[in-house]
Image 1 (cartoon, rainbow, N blue to C red):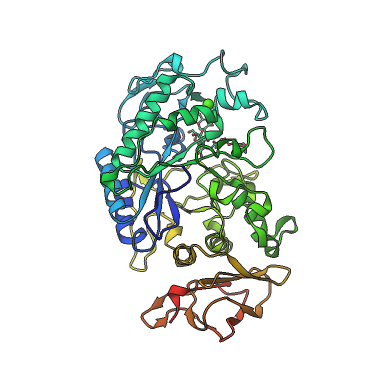
Image 2 (tube, rainbow, N blue to C red):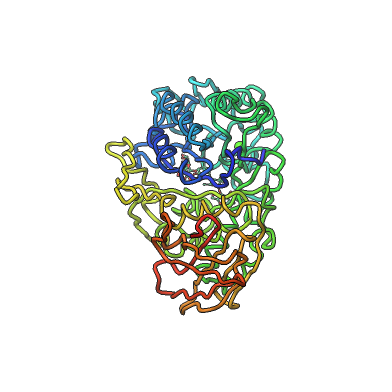
Length: 496
Ligand code: ARE
Ligand code: CA
């Protein structure tokens, strides 16, 4: 299912990485609902291994111990309350589902709900899974039992990803346990799933699991017969045996080339220029927009895991990041997901970050709450990129321009671009080392508009720039390259 089941008029989701359920519930009510966000991707809610060396890394949550809903984000009643309150605020919840594997192959002990497990015995009694539920030498062809060659689809699907005990989704018992877990979440009112490590499962096995899923819960406000949304995490940069397109039949697929290429464009590496993105998306060889999920960065590649390399844009390069987010949210391609991170100190050695493991802001392993300052920004180490005015206002822009096409493309053949979305919205970006100064068609009705990058429309005035569209629909723009945000965005709902 490719449709995210958003409530009417909403068109983007946000990943609230490592947030606690109580904070997400509050955020749905106080910010996401009122500001037009469609949904939240939450961190894995199921019990995971407790890793103490390094101390409580973010990635311990990608090592399932059971499907009990107890993690450092909260327990089952807190999760249930969050889903109910977010749905009531018009905001859907998508669960990061770890169904390819269990923990690393040598850990043992107790998980975040106290369930015991022993990976060396392939034993997870709280599910229960035992040795025959995993791939082994009869199904995985490598000596080590790990994936050694990404050009061999059998290894990629049947061997261990970084030493994580690999479930055999060919078995009906395993399929049923996984479907039971996902159905429990559907019963609590979630709208769909991000399916972790989808590349490492056979598309047909995944289909068999997805076919077992219930319709979305009518009691939680979904329409009758609505199917769970699915986005499959497949890293496909175009150079491996497995392609994302094998998974389109099951749902959407993450388009990792989107943020990677856009990072190169905004950083101007490999002679890339903004004027080249006139046909961004399918025109650049990416998946069809209706089968893909677009994002600038994710929880992996913002810290050097996964794929995308050094050119990925993150909150650390805020000026470029906001421009890239604005482009993505204004551009008519794919379903869009905004990242919301926490801060950590990097420790770069030989090009890689020795601190890439650091978990969320915490005290003795207990995740700290997201505090909100009077100006709307977040404290306690939470970055809250989704609350940055330039980003949240573009989430709203995307809602306003929905249904229109891209028109009036303009560029200076280098790094200054502008385009309209029908007669509903207009965006101009100056990523040049000099001012942008030009008269450009906007497609919008004549009048005065508030630039939603530099401010908001409040009552009958603008807190930022006021932009005048003349009788012929053009604007006389000048955007200095030294501005905090060298771009301008106007739309129908920000007209004075
Ligand atoms: C941790 C330790 C490992 C240890 C393992 C088992 O870091 O050293 O061996 O535990 O004990 C995350 C972290 C991992 C972490 C894991 C479990 O990133 O470091 O391992 O959690 O705790 C491939 C997959 C892709 C995957 C990326 C990271 O194809 O699915 O690797 N992304 C998802 C999540 C991750 C998560 C997992 C999967 C596992 O988003 O957060 O891992 O649940 C090329 C290939 C890609 C490949 C990429 C990197 O680009 O094309 O397919 O991505 O290289 O290898
Ligand atoms: Ca597998």
